[in-house]
Amino acid sequence: MNKITRKLARKAGFVFWAESCPWAPPDQIVDWGSNYDAELQKHTELVVRETLKVLIKKDWTVSDLEKIALKHFDITDATEEVEEELEEAWNQAIK
Image (spheres, rainbow, N blue to C red):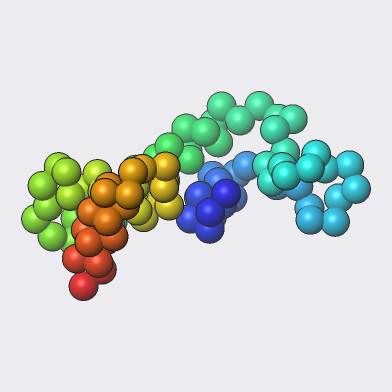
């Protein structure tokens, strides 16, 4: 889980396993043993707001916005060509 996703999940109210917890499942960060209906709704709202903060900086095309949002949230399961486009769009966004 990347830093932004973790920050938004924590802000939304998800419960995290303590790093020193002996009974935490391996490679698990969020304790999924709770009902997270309200937290998931809040998390979705926070993701949309975080995305809008990044995207409203300039007058972007839809394609640019998609690339910037994917890069901002560290979604990297794209082809090399898309990765290069993402990097270029991201560099433009943060100028």
